[in-house]
Image (cartoon, rainbow, N blue to C red; front, side, top):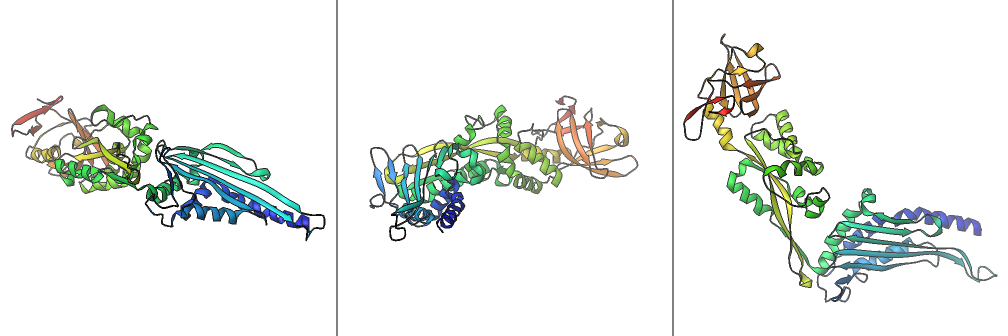
Length: 414
């Protein structure tokens, strides 16, 4: 009978061990956080050490609930569970958790004439440290004599356990209320400012999810030390963060489609921009834009802390786009790099990146402009489903901003 009871108890305890993993611990804390914590430090259940900046949360509703869950988890008639540490250091922005569980079962002298006999006793501990300033942390778990210990595992190694998400939920929902954390950002103001400069219909600004993610701490992981707008820094920066920026692909492609690019072209253009590929579309400009984020602990009287997050903006240049409409007035012969079927045509630019070839036999073909550069224009033949690159010679004239006609030759404007 004793052996069977011992085996059953061990089996039950082993089955519960998985609930003692770090992400499970924080998920339990997260559940406990659902109870409202008063946001004033004057309450007795929140202890604040002004000298060290440490807030003790063990006697909060969250801490007490976690303690009850640990007691419920412990096995045996002499089991116990204890939250030995549950603190947040407001100066170092560090969360510290230490948990203790004792599984113990014994037969008393009334059951066993030989006296009090322990069937089993196992002590388990777990500790967690997580710093929200550096986004780093580690944990140690001691399972007692029923399983091997896990020592100094980094938070990144258990990302699948959603530890960071759980920890962030803890800081926002619980400690945030305790210390009165205030967070503000200028995402909307930055977007409005850029829209006023170029027109709201002519810009695509990075989503708030991307900008919120692109904090200085996260950017440092990609060797990005600062946000520099314009110039050569744009492409390498976007290449480094493309794993995150490509989450914007569908939204950016949709915006480009609404501006007139067809589905396949819109996808290609969007992907090239988001992954830092060379930018070859003169009617589109790409730049970086910093967005200010600020935070403070109101109840502790700390000053505002400021940091710039990374944002990016895609600008549709109406001046370049509309200039193609002016070109429609000029019927021109242009040389063709691939000759063949297109050698005898006259190409007209109809505006909005749309071209038409008027052939000598009176027939027409229609094209979409993909890109242009010094001395060339690349089109796509919708009828034959293939690209065409046109090389400019004499006879193609463009209207510059001063309404003066200039010949456009191999080197661009003359």
